[in-house]
Image (tube, rainbow, N blue to C red; front, top):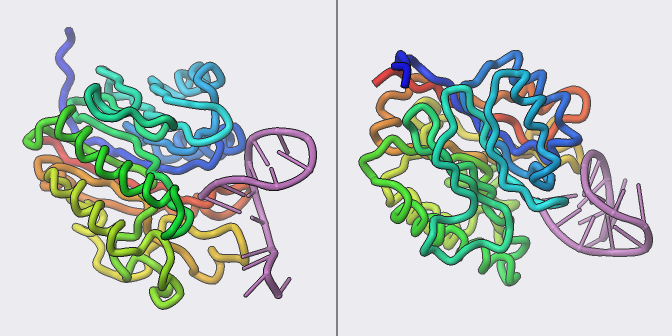
Length: 266
DNA sequence: ATGGTGGCTGGGCCA
């Protein structure tokens, strides 16, 4: 095994809303930003349709947990991609959908997650969402040591606080902001994870998602629901975090923007 | 405007 020099790494998460539709934008974004790790959600691809060769040509190893037309999560890495685990850890009730994949990249245990939307507060899908988050906590308790370098990033479909939505009064009785959702997010963070973006930015109305409908992006109607949660050992080494709003502009954008975290050397 | 847009598909469902 060659010894690798440990340097700063740049990690990112992006709900691409169909990798087939988004491939030109993703390739461009990887070339321009050069992240060491990119977690993607909503690839909407079967496993045998994932563009492994195209990603390799850009210098990335790929791990993908797909299911076809919906969901699908992936991890790209150019700092190693080992111990790949699709779905929740063994012993945790398995998900019937492709919403989490975990791998070790550059010594960091990284999960790419696509938390269920929930649809409506009285919908069965909402109970699935809460159950899913409880299983995410069980997954972490099973898979990872709280003292390890670990990151859970992706589309949580939960806005952690009212300052993370464009108008909290518009969200009364809606999903993404309910106390129960925020409580299960806190349970997941209780593993020992922190919302790293908030170490660097206190302002309200910094969003990672804007509805395609009604010109949401141009009206500033969005939510911050894409999060990079990290254990303290990673969080304290992090040196910057940002949301790339430019990726939400232009030709055929995803409705989500990438969120980035720069992690300094140990 | 009880809608809108975009992605899955090939008529609606989902976000």
